[in-house]
Structures are given as structure tokens and as C-alpha cells.
Length: 171
Length: 194
Image (cartoon, rainbow over all chains, first blue to last red):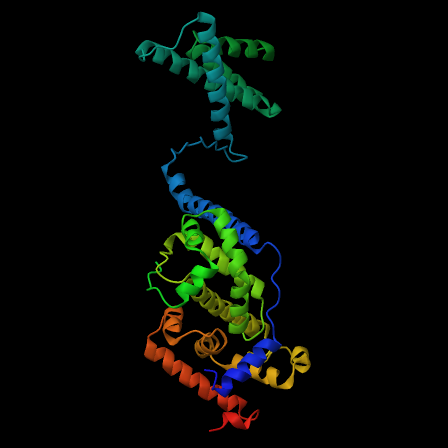
């Protein structure tokens, strides 16, 4: 090697360009760099795992169906009446049950079901009459509704309310 | 797993770095790692500086070499010289470093791939500067064998172990490297012309 002129040229160049001095504590810095890389790798692994698992987790979780409330379209009188009637009937039924102290039967009694349906029908008529009462020109039609509720379903709470309304109208 | 046979530098290694230190290093002892870093960091720096064509961020390369030693010290079976193992890691790290630098330069479209910065080249001694440019102009594989052979004083067998190539491949690279260097440096000296 020593007889090779390339050797001398390279050695001279090497002496001309001495290696720069290393900064202090290179071993400690290498250790810190490894620690940082490990931390970054573990965080990246967690994030990756979450990204992979997330779609499956959504599929596995039980779905809770939230009830959708659909309101009737504005201006549709029949739907509005039905809704009001339903709500009124439910209120009346709830009040009656509360006053009688009757707990809900575990099995459906046909007699109770019949009473409930009668109450509900009378309430629908009452609600229809209330709706018509909003329009001053429809008072006669409203009175007809109240009369039907009172006469056809006399034993219902809605019939009593309808009778009161007729008295207020002076009919 | 580093399983090469013991070579000539093993004796030199035993003088520089006792077998006890190697044993503790393989066992993962922190103090042994610090001791090894103190012993070899400057040698690793010198080798990487030469492999990078007497330029580049040597500190970064040395750090990377030490990180690999720290992570893979358990794989070292002490059947070879510790320095040979470290030199092999350094050669690989320098290859990666040069690859990254080439990508960076390509992206920045700034400096030439071969020449050192203009202001520094101007300051260099003319001959040394041209040698540096010529060595930098060699492909990494040719530069590695030239540096290891001429500047590190390693034998062909050691170079084979370090670069992971056969004896004939190393000899071919050495031959091609010489021809290319002579061609590049032909203007410098009549001695180089045959």
C-alpha cells in the first residue's frame, strides 16, 4: 500500500481535513434519541391501533334507536286534530288511572281496553270541537262535536268536559 | 446476528477494549456502553468523515451508530473484533446518510451532488481539495473500499466482512476505484500515470 502513490495523496488529503470534534456526551444523546424514538413509536402504534379498531367498535356497540318525532305538516287540520286528540286522551286516561289508583295490568284486560278506546274516541271528539272553537265562524260545528262526545260517550271524562263547553256556549 | 470469524484486528481490539468490556457491553450494562463510546466515538467519527468525503454531519452519524450498538449489542457474539463490527455499522449508516443527503439535495436543487461547498473548496489546499472532490465523485461502493483500504489500513478480508461482499467483489471495486481516482487525479501528478 505504501508504495502506491494513491496512498500518499489520500493520506495527505486526510491529514488536511481532520475530522471535526464531536459534541460532548454523545453516548447520553444517543440514549435520549432512542428513548424519544421509542415514545414516538408507542404513540404511533396506539394511534394506529385506535384507527384500526374504531370502525369495528362502532359496529359492535348496541344501537339505540331514538324515536323520531314527526310533526304533521302545517295547515293539515286533520293531522293536527288527531295529534291534539291523542294527547288530550292520554292526559285524561293518565288522570283517571291516577285518581283510581289503578296500576297498569300486566296482562291486557279487554274491558279496560274497551273503556280506554271509548275514552279516547270521546277525547278525539272533544279535541276536534276545541279546534273548531278557535275559528269564530265554526262555533256551530264545534257544538256538534261536543254534543256527539256527550251523547255518544256519556260515561267518559271527555263527555263531562264537552257538557261544560256546551253550557259555556249557552247551548 | 454478527457471527464472523475472528480477524487480525481482534488482537488490536483486545488491547483497546478488553474482553471484560465486550462481555459487559453484550450484557447491556450502561457503564460499559459509555466506556465503549469514549473509546470508539472518535474512531467512528474519523471513519464516517472519510466515508462522507471529508464533509457532512459526522456527529449525527456517530449518534446513529451508537444507537444501533445500544440496541443490538446483545447480538454481538465477540467472535470478531469489536472495531470491525462498529466499522460495518458505520459504513451502513454512512450509506443511509448519503442517500438522505442526495434526496435532500435533489429536492432543494441547490448544490451539486459531488462538489463540496464552493467557499470551502476555495479555502482548501489545491491538491487536497482536488483529492477530496475526486474521492467524493466515486460511487459509495468504490469510495468505501478505497477509504477502508488506504485510509483505515484494513486488509481485503476485513473489508469483505465490513461491506458484506466477496473477496473478488472487493478486489474488483478496489481496482475500479483506483482507475477512477487516477483518471480524476491524473492532472495532479505524473506519478499516477502509468
